[in-house]
Image (cartoon, rainbow, N blue to C red; front, side, top):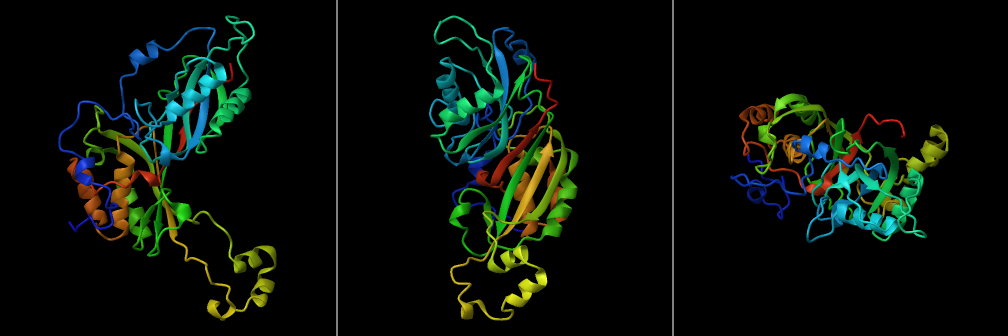
Length: 359
């Protein structure tokens, strides 16, 4: 197999450190993909206190300054920040339960969590009031989150006390952004995408996706620290799409085409005149080509998505072939896959539920 180390990871990433040969006894608290755990004891311990109202929250955040999602003794975490905001809002300690854990640097367009809130009167301590309306919860929590600058509650629903954000999830969708091009990445894209200097073969990457999608033993696409009892997973979707890079601002010619008839726009533009003669091209950067890899399924092994992206990237650059991808999948070993993609290009895009009616 050709050398797959070239441009597969920034120099700061270490494959050996990320994928040690021996399995640790505990699962890292900042796993970005779902592991399958025993749920019975947790479900049995769910609160049945009729005075509590359970809320389901959709949250978005930029993962760059977070040390992962799960609460830790040291470090700023998504759960820690949310619990602090809820404590300021309710005046009581609140436990936040996430649907999906994310690593340090991983972003979320829509992660989901649930919280139980007992509304106690501030004027008459001990008096229990009717639950807050969901919109009141959203506005109040965002008020205390606004100083953070990188996390926000986008939606709130009331759910029964036995509705669990993690175990009721039916499907999770992850996105991964790749920017291809020889120029340095724009400052606006820092920690938002994986920069690939080489051009990417989109057709080859799509062919590799067809090999990996479906019901498989993904032993080659799991971290050595993954403690899932079974490596069997169903990947409902794995696709690569070229999209417009962001932030996107239309060039002069694009604005003319948008605001006027195409023929008029073409006539008004000096076709064939080099940009340096008109001065219109000075200071305008060449755009990178932007690709989004989408992975969708009910659950994922620890680091599965980033390892899948690492292999697809290497197919795109020609470092490995589609036949190599088949061999990696069939090998069912921890060391078979290419080095995994860095965390900062990964986004948790959506968590799907069959939501009950507002109780």
